[in-house]
Image (cartoon, rainbow, N blue to C red; front, side, top):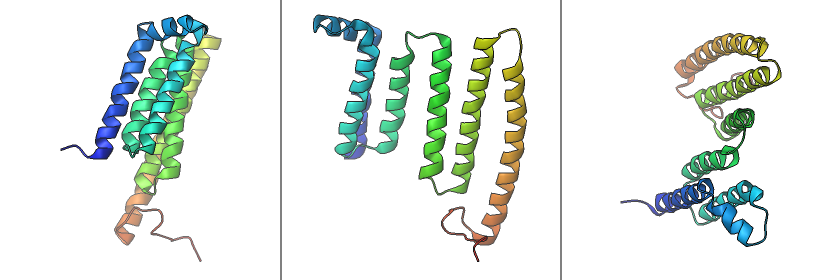
Length: 184
């Protein structure tokens, strides 16, 4: 049996996917043209409709995680459907960075915080490769810098996980609020 929260979230996902499909088939642009609005603003209209439905679903007690994931995916599809590849990759990098920043702020679990840092670093790598490809496709500066950043990120993850494991062995928790080893 579905809870009220999950049912509300599934209803949001159905509406968001419906809006996305209407946009991709050109129906939203046709409705906007019939209403006297320019059809080239259909992506913004569809995005605002998805955000509005998400806010209403959250207000009625929908599952926050499901609504955020579904809204992010459908908004990404709507905003980048008819764009060039650079805009798609830049939007993807921005979404990854925003998800990582949210994970850093909202999570108290040390492992989740490390994963959020890795996600933000990978978002920066996507941007490095995208700009390198757009500015000068013949030189591999962005790709080389992304590989260098990946090696540094791997070392950061290894050291961070070693610290988290040491703290877990001593304190039996990875909650950032529970341990205060560096406080006086």
